[in-house]
Structures are given as structure tokens and as C-alpha cells.
Image (cartoon, rainbow, N blue to C red; front, top):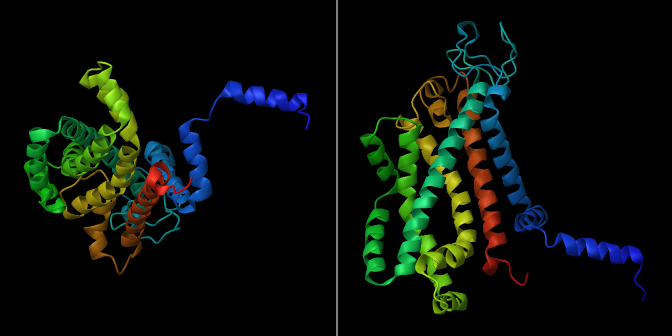
Length: 308
């Protein structure tokens, strides 16, 4: 069968372009093979947009009080401004605007805590997995002792030491998750250390830091990405629980957990949207991150991809 000049030109263009980036391949397979994961990714993207453009998307400042518009149901027009899309609370504050700004707080805490915690977990897990021997044995016993403490009790203990604020919440959540995540990193490092290219690098005279940076870390990025993505949902849930109990981000900054406590508990029957709206926001955020992380785990882990 003869090949036309157009087909030859198309093959040459494809050869010049080279293979598609790995993240584009993951995105295509996510949409095609994991529809729930794609939905989760869309929810995550929506939350990021809300967090970045909260000032432009909110209809009112989150702290503005409208005493003439207290406990208005969703869709009611305001006396001095646009309609309240999700109603108002007992002080006349716009629930929609507080939800939007709460997304900024939740995303800041989630990405900050997960990013800081993953860096610490990678440092600890890589060090233990690469060094091995007595160093690994001793450090793993410390990890076992730390993990044996219930997660939420550990969070409350750390928060009682510091004053409430975004920084202490990020630090507490990062520190509480570091040791459990380091176990995952350590397991990936131990699996990578058995590969022939590690022995070849050692035989070629490469020093330890070069082996770690060039051969170990690039080959354990898939489980790190999965752990980070799944951890975002857990961090949002933990931050909401801390704020609900009064140990999280203090007022006047709005958080979803804080919106569930206080006036929502008092006026829940009279104004049910005060509890329903932040509860749905927390549920959607956790669902989105969990579905997205679960889909990434299936796509990035070669053991879960079957014959593909």
C-alpha cells in the first residue's frame, strides 16, 4: 500500500513534536477512564478558582453586617445591594460571600499543610529508606510511637500550645500527618533501592546525594502525588473540625467549620441553610479531593493499571 505525501508529512511532524507530556496523557486517561475522578478534578478546580478570585466573586464583604436583613432565606433581595444567593445569618452577613471566602481559607490551609507535611515526609522517609540499618530501625520506632497517638487528639494538643491562627493550623496539620506519610515514602524508597539502575549508579561512582536526587526521588513521585492529593481532603475535614470546636482560624476570617458552630446551632431550625450550606461545601470539597486522588492512584500506580 503506497504512502501519500500528506501521510509522510504528518509522520514527520509527529516525530518532531515527540511524545506528549506525561501530565497530558494522565489528563486524557482521567477523562476517558475515570469519570468520577474527572468530576473530582472539576470540583477541585472550582474551589481553587473560588479561593483565588474570592474578592471578585463575592457579592458582599464577608464581615459586612446588615441588621435589617437578618436570617433571610436564599434568593431574597437585599435592601442595599444584590440578592443574597444563599441567604443571611443572624447578623445579616451574606452566607454566599462567607462560603467563597471560606474556600480561600480552606484552600490556603489545605495546600499549605499538605505541601509542608509532604516535604517533611519526603525528607524523613527518603532518609530512613536510603540509609537503612540501625538508623532506619530507631527512627521507625519513633514514627510508630507518634502514629500511635490518635490524630485528632494530637491536633488538639498542638493547637493548645499555640495561639489560634492560619499559621499554627497549617503547622499542626502538617506535623500531625508527616510521620504517617513518611511510611509511604519509605516503602517507595525501599522498593526503588532494589532496582538495577541504583546498583549501576553506585558502581559508576555516583555519590549518595546524586543517587537520591537523580534516581530515587523521580521514581517515587507517583505515590507522593497520590498521598498529597488524598491528604488534601483529610486536611480540609480536620481544619473544619478544629474550627467547629474553636481551635482553628479565629474570627473575623470565615471558615466552613466555624460557620457550622455558634449561630448555626442556635438558628438551625429557623434558618436551616446556615447549617446546610457549609456542610455541603465541606462534603463537596472532601468528595472532590478524594475522588481525584483515588483516580490518580489508579492511573499512576503501574500495579493498578493491569495489562495497560
